Length: 158
Length: 158
Image (cartoon, rainbow over all chains, first blue to last red; front, side, top):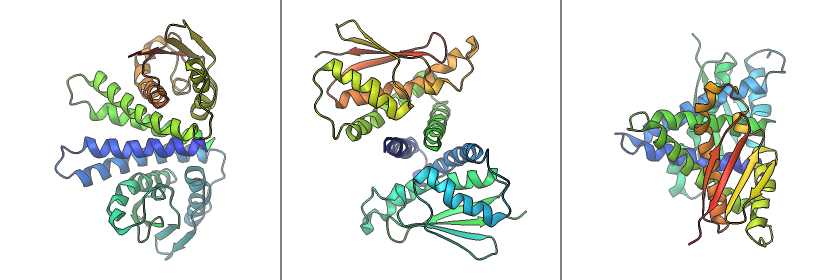
């Protein structure tokens, strides 16, 4: 229990710190989201190296995604992704019906606008982890009803 | 294992982020240390409320310190404080012979100057936790040989 709240509280402070430190910038929201995302990216890169150090090589992209949905998600959010879908053309959608960073926010419509700042770091985490597994992608998040959340991963082929 | 590295990596990124975001300021080192300390303070306040919600009231100051050295330290750093000393006049010294945030830094003399930025957040954590337990204090850290570290708590009587 202790471990979970430790990470949660540190994440909350990080969001609040970065948000306030960007107040002087022209576009607070975009700047702070970009910074949170890039912090997440670097943490994701480090984490995946640690998590996969004893894993066998992944068979293919889908196999990689399954690892992300199970082991990676479980290590960070203490649960697995509830649903993984793909169009087999480079788009993956990970749905978490009770996303950890949103469970503390009331689910009224008026709080929907606070959601993006709690999703920037997780999007970066995903992009960083996939990047170190050799998958270049764009990750976006979408919330339709809190605390459920969909992460869309769009693979970038070179 | 996963939980531990998650918190570690996030802390490392926080240190690096805050350090870089303060580069424009006059006194980078002092400003970033103050910011890390205050982030730690707020996390410490939240954590201690969670940790003590089912605890009985502490008998006295020493009892509070023992809780910090055992339960609090264990929840955050996965080990207890190795040694607790006091002069019975409001000064407590907590010694950790293998402090988690210093174990990744090589113990050569030339890296001693990097230590303070990894100790600001932990000092804040301690001060925040004690503050919410009704103990106002000043917390400082001292490293003589890495990765051992001494935290000095000086109680402020009003």
